[in-house]
View (cartoon, rainbow, N blue to C red):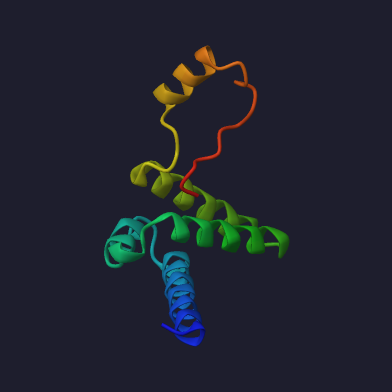
Length: 109
């Protein structure tokens, strides 16, 4: 593949991420799982990062409700994808790790 085809694939993926985020923002309350399940091939760490970038944008452009919603979706999706430590794993790490005060950043993100 050439650099231009890699760029166009990346642009296409970003477009699909943004389109899915837009659909989530516009869907009726409670329909989020249905929307997400319609694009399961996009549900990965890259999409979680896209959600967080969009949330950051909204937070800095006076739209805190959309920002909070997208952070919530990102957190829930991270849990479901195994990208976010579970409460039990966090508790075990905090009792056995000297750096327990430092937040743990998932390796896959």
